[in-house]
Amino acid sequence: MLGKIVKITYYDHAILLNCISLKDAEPIKRQCIGCLLHEDDEKIIVGFDFPQNANSGMRAIVLRKADIISVEIIKDEL
Image (cartoon, rainbow, N blue to C red):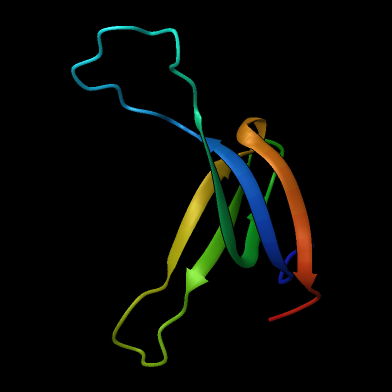
């Protein structure tokens, strides 16, 4: 799947500030869309911002596989 454009739905952490009750506390569902750059047994790395000049680095997100809800292939390659 490396190099494919993917849409990933995953659980992210939630920070509770000035919390009075924990009854509604749960992880936040998020989605990211990008190019699958790396995958191993524990994590995947998705690149989502690729600069057009050589003076700037890309942006990516590292996701734990245990937190991933679904992976959808959007396009076979970048």
